[in-house]
Amino acid sequence: GAGVSQTPSNKVTEKGKYVELRCDPISGHTALYWYRQSLGQGPEFLIYFQGTGAADDSGLPNDRFFAVRPEGSVSTLKIQRTERGDSAVYLCASSLRFDRYNEQFFGPGTRLTVL
Amino acid sequence: AQSVTQLDSHVSVSEGTPVLLRCNYSSSYSPSLFWYVQHPNKGLQLLLKYTSAATLVKGINGFEAEFKKSETSFHLTKPSAHMSDAAEYFCVVSRTNSGYSTLTFGKGTMLLVSP
Image (spheres, helix red, strand yellow):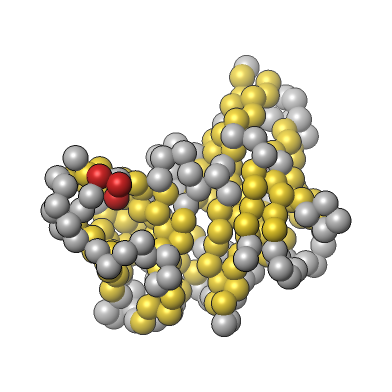
């Protein structure tokens, strides 16, 4: 079956521009997560959705970052006024449930480069 | 707070020799622990998970890990390395908040396999 997909796979933008990154979770997965992986680091949690609502956005670095999931499926991560420090791979994951033993399935990521 | 420390940023082995990737964790309660693997340009894939049912956990592709509470360790091993095992490996602890969980990743260990 289809896994988690993310588009675009690569995004190059200029400092100060606005970008949107899209995530299509596995069908039927109610839990959706965004992570950011900077060069040489492990992924870091950004935000978690249960259904349509953001249950935990404690990992978003500042108010330039925002994410939505209006119909409980596809999610979009939005970054305003991009900075060079935002350059990273943005990973999306989904899971069938949200308990701590449940496997999160990851997409291939979107590599964002801010020039 | 939960955290994981991967003790080696790089590990080099020859094909056919044993693999040992070390991980120590810190958790205020009984943790859920995972190992994920990331091949170049591919998504993160779950290798195995510890859910408190058994301290020796077997995963895919011949990998296994042993949970040692007294040492706060969760090292990943494989008896005989294969060229296809070359990838980055992440030790992960699950952080549980009010009924849902998010993942905290280590910085990763790059496994290099030479012929």
